[in-house]
Image (tube, rainbow, N blue to C red; front, side):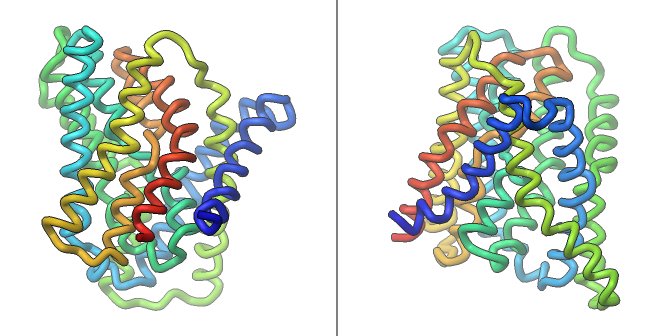
Length: 311
């Protein structure tokens, strides 16, 4: 247990530092969005490019890990929608937004730092193979489902075009595609170029954790916190539980590899659920509360999953 605390303590200490710094005016609240923008648009794409490009990405692309991760996400999406409709009486569009809150994982700002801290550089290829598909699959799923269910739905065609544009314009995708090309071609980067990408990649962990901590000041507990708690538990417990069953019992992936996918599925909901909710103006308070509750609770649930995965 002490070893588990040693893994997560620095992670959540950095998150707490970001929260306190912004809350007490030691770091400007306006700077949080810029910091997260730096992580998402510059540092993480460089990390993805360099890590994928210098690893055997083909070997890391394990269907026995990727399929259970996204199967679990899909089940959580359905459970979240059903709970919103039948337990909390949400309208269809609000229910889809709530389901998305229980589905979309914070793979970058929280997932990458914890995976690196818990399992080292060896976890990155498998982790990045999941991240590479994450936004493309789940954003498209959420947007298409929203357009099919809400009353004022627009034609589906423009929605698909918009989803594709959002995915293609994402710098994370550029880093992933560039890294895959580099890995498949076997080209070697010149030392100064490799150092450039490596140095930027090293900024991801501290900047991401400080940024997510600062961003939590934006989300205050309000109405619908009970529904947000349900969505948080679905994300933190149900998703990794499904991934565990499928990876270990169905696909029989060795634990020393499966644990990467299971732990990543145990990460809290990402900030994109709030972006999604505000874009459609559906379930905004639920999304905001889910980010706050899930991130705070994840300190306990991630510790629990680390213990289970170490048995």
